[in-house]
Image 1 (spheres, rainbow, N blue to C red):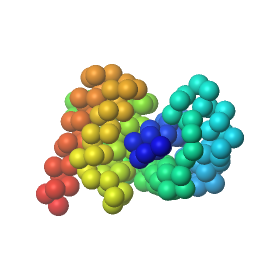
Image 2: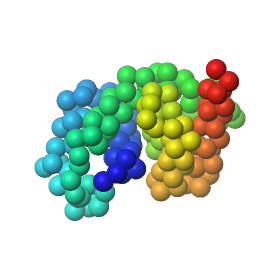
Image 3: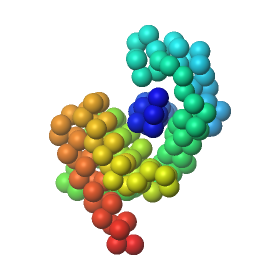
Amino acid sequence: MGRKEAREIALHLVFEFGFQTFASEEIVASRLEQSVLDSLAGDIALYAGPMSDDQKKYIIATVVGVGEHLAELDESISKHSTNWNTNRLSRITVAILRLALYEMQYTEDVPVSAAINEAVELAKKYDSKESSAFINGVLGTVSREQAKD
């Protein structure tokens, strides 16, 4: 399993916790226990196979980080969703944007261009073509603003 797959699992958890209060490090870690992964592996191939400690650390840090910066990330989504009512965005679109914005702003070993590209690919897989274009636009705008600073 590589970073791409770890990011996809992080997205699943960001999506899940978007329906409730974001979880603590311990709760996120419990979702990554081998017995839980094995139970999901039969239905979702992504969860099959071993996960390294580095991958688990990345997933936990990312999901917890999204939760810690949720208000700021959501404010950025609202600010950059021109001509879109954020209440009308799908939950998966919001989860993808939260994850990508977190990586762009707080994950030093993920280039901004990679965070944007991965978000667009996740949108193509889990959402719609229109949402992938929307996500690309929002993240591109944020990227250009960050480059000015």
